[in-house]
Image (cartoon, rainbow, N blue to C red; front, side):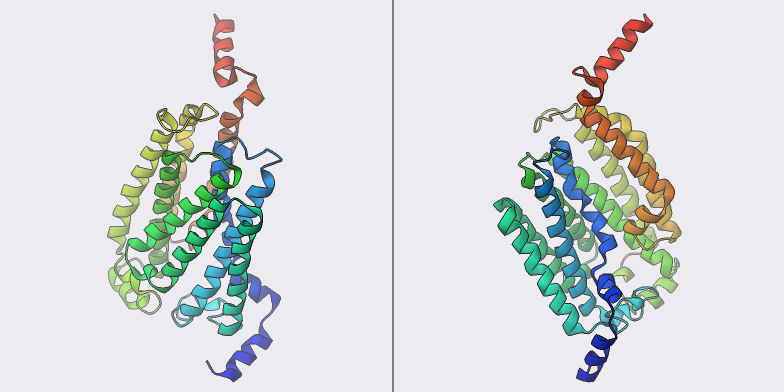
Length: 331
């Protein structure tokens, strides 16, 4: 791109273009930082809210910075994609210099926030996330299977940072739940991309090669297999988390989360169905636009909050006390 092209792009860019570059709708992914505080029963504590909010903000800024850098590197490939060609950098509305400059500012801000206001452990996690996303942008996203593993690892870092921000211990099984679920959703995103381009091998090879070479190795059959395996692992890991009593002690009866299993299974199966249909571009769009999926998440969250804060809702005996009283009155 020539200097004249950069000047023209910079002059034609609007505030909306810069907002699109940052992809704020993707910030919904950072709600994973709430997992640790929620499991530690500190999510609704007034004293914990600033730390949780700042951690969420730091990851949002770091993620937006990664998107800006990624769009600069992938601008030529994105220009050949049916939907990504409308991105500000790929379409030429924002110059490469402008995108890199904004990304650099956001990166500095993402690091400064934990340095000034959060525990040192969060600083280390944020730095690790920035390095990981940088490696993903320049190299790892071209490595089949490893690309999805890296994305899932980024969610583990989010969950870990949230726990460190409010000083609660991290459960290995909870981290495993986050990792396996995000692994499943990552493969689902790849399946959605192939379904949008064309499900047949020949169609995929002829069109994917123009904008993402990695997808050439992800055949529909392989992704269906990976989705099946990762979905099963995610459900089993969730069950092990709810029933495990040997790890870090939980301040609530997390075994009662077992009864939310039907919602978990339905959500995973529906997600798998939607990815194969290719109606949505990825997990974020599925969560935000599919009503059944959104209501499943809302209902599961409500049930989980009842389980976590059951003594607040039902008294010192919690759910077991209510069930016991119901049994006594019935007798």
